[in-house]
Image 1 (tube, rainbow, N blue to C red):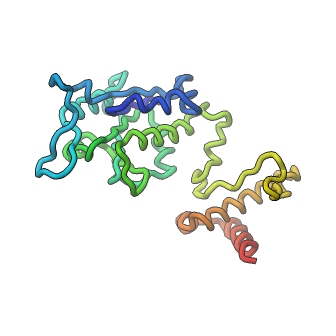
Image 2: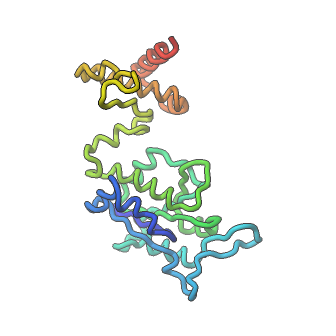
Image 3: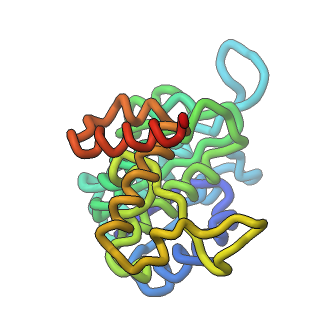
Length: 249
C-alpha cells in the first residue's frame, strides 16, 4: 500500500516510520510512506506557506497555491495513478473515523492524507481536491499530523504480515462491533487478585464463551451505544443477560 502525506512537518512521522509495528511494516515494504511538503512547492524567496483569511479574523490559513501543488503531487505519487488515489483531509469538521473506515482505507492501493495547519485550508481546496474529511473526535489539535499518524498506524495493522499473528487485528476492540475482553498474564495473583479460573482450565470452548461474555459485558458497561448499534444474536443476548445478572448481584 502506498500512503502519500501532505504535511509541513514530515519529520514528525519518524514516530511511525522508525518504531514498533508500523516501523517494521515500513522497513519490510508492506507500506510505502511518502511525504509532500507544500513548502517545497512555493515560488517566493521566503517559501511562504501561510496567508491571511479574507474577511479578517484571528489566525492564518495554509497558502493555497503550494498546498494544491503538493496535493496534486501526492495524488500522482510515485507511479502517476492520480485517478486511483483517494484524498483524505484530517479535519475536526470531518466525520468521526470508525473501525470500518480503517478496514476500507486499508484495502486501498493508494491513499493521500492532507494534514492541515494554522486555522485550516481554503474551502475551495476542500471542494476541488478532497474526497473525504475525517476526524478523530470532537476536539482540536494543532495540526493534522498526529491524526494522520493515528490513521496510518491503524491502517498498517490490517496489512497482511504487519502483525505477528494476522488474526490479531480481527480480535481488537471494535472489529466485531464490541470492545475486547479483559486480558491477564503472569503472575497468577496481582495485588491480591487472581486470574479468572476459567483461563487456567485449558477448556478452549469455556474460555471462548467466557471471553465473549466479558466482551459483551465490557461493551455494556463502557460503551452501551455499541450494544444499541449492533444487533446481537439470541445467544449473545442471553450471554449478556447472564453478565448483567451476575454484575448486579
